[in-house]
Length: 434
Ligand code: SF4
Image (cartoon, protein in one colour):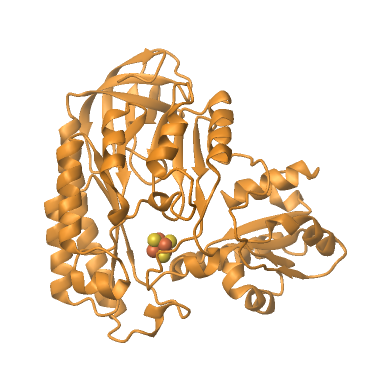
């Protein structure tokens, strides 16, 4: 989203955008600081870009979260970097670019604003039929391992009329799937006295006519309430899909992580969700190797995951961040053990995902067509409502007619792997089928 806003801002100021960076005057590298792996990947991208540009005069600019944390150090340690701009400074891009083209190295960082600020109309980096819509920025949860609240600031909901206007524009432009995102979508509106909460916001979005579906990403388990569950169950245009990162299930680990729920709360939540929305697909994220995670905590996590049978699961290995409370924790888990736990977990989930996917066999499911496999006859791919873009699997299916990306078909699921599904006999339909 930050990238899309930077692109929108620059293009609005007359800059010409290109993805062929060696011929550009400047290249932006949007960085991430969430975990060590992401930080290293950002630094590697800067170094690789610098190396591929050689003596080329293209300005190299680091933008985003890593700049908030290590801006000065980045400029000091990477002489090829011409400038760095933090996440709260994109409104000052004009002055920043002027400085750069005067030949000065520039670093701009500001404190987060008190209210949600979107800087410009953005340019989508996703296909037009599938768009992310940011509903808030920042986070008040203060998980002990996470730098995001320090980087992005406190939670600021975006005005509901602003969100609605953007969804209307996206739908008018051909969007068929709207993914609502924020650091915590379920905290929406809670920082304001008279704004709707997430359920109210969804109702406002649903008042927009159109043939699109809504997907809710990045929820916080203890804020999924009965009103939200009921709306997801009743409303055809909301995907029967929830992304609920739990991080862990063991109470001792959850307490050390600063997460506000306990295993019993999770058990109650998933029981209720499965009972009330039988077709719901749940995606979760868990972390292994958090300081103090013992073998028995990890076994508890494996058992919990087997019991809950999540349709999709992502995992990552804890990495220590100096500026977080957990950065000072002792009882660090050796890297070798954390790696082993990660592999064990992913192997276990692979088996379960395959078993889970089998429940779709024989069902005729609506699919949003995303594209054609090049050079492979008439095979297409798309996603059901149970698969989120980029993080989950796809459905592959043959079709005798030409299908446009962003169109709907319904097809019979005939094979299921751990990630992807295969379907046959797709029938094109004019509207989102149910
Ligand atoms: S809810 Fe997410 S973004 Fe917020 S502090 Fe926790 S991990 Fe970080």
